[in-house]
Amino acid sequence: MLKKDLMLKSPVSKTIGIENLKDGGFGAVLSRAGVGKTRFLVQIALAQLLSDEKILHVSLDDPIEKINLRYSEGYTNLVDSIGYVDPQKAVRLWEDINLNKVGISYNESTFDTNKIRDYLKSFKKADIPLPSIMIIDGLDFDTDISDTLEKLEALHREFSVFIWFSMKCHREENLCEDGFPIQLETYKDSFDKAVFLQPVEDKIEAVILKDGDRTDQRYQMYPATMTIIE
Figure (tube, rainbow, N blue to C red):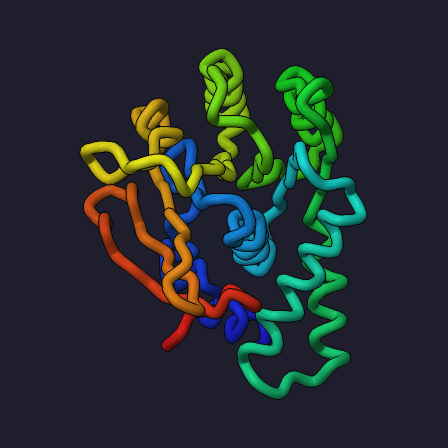
């Protein structure tokens, strides 16, 4: 019951749809620095964990301790958003789903798609279910990463894992003709889904840029918790 209530309250349920999270190959969460890309990606991952799926979170920005803290805070915010919850039930559920989360920390010089492939192969060798989604947080889309994306597309095909990326854009840059930030415009044919986060007064607005025919839908969220304003 608690799991179902949390999934219904998830900002991902409202904006993308939990059943729609891994429909395709690549997805992106875009915003300028500090708006909430990583926190929204964590909510995407939590939605999968609550669906009893495994997730792999790869960060080029945060150490493992920070990754774990982000998930703990994201889960707590989600629990708090549904009102009173028996604390013991909330802790037990977190202990159960947290077992399905794996975090890996790299930096720009150590990030290597071959290492990720080897890690995913280790799941197969041990006959462990593969992650259904992989988060990659911190790739620099202001540079030419065509080769990296090609290799990640190969991982998607080989392991059937949907990959969600953070994509940083910049305040001073104008949107392209189709309304995309230049970072997405450059690689738009590779992406099936894209959510753009932007501050609007004291709130965050999530705009669906790519998701089949579900474009330009807008949702407002509380910045502190990333929960949807009903």
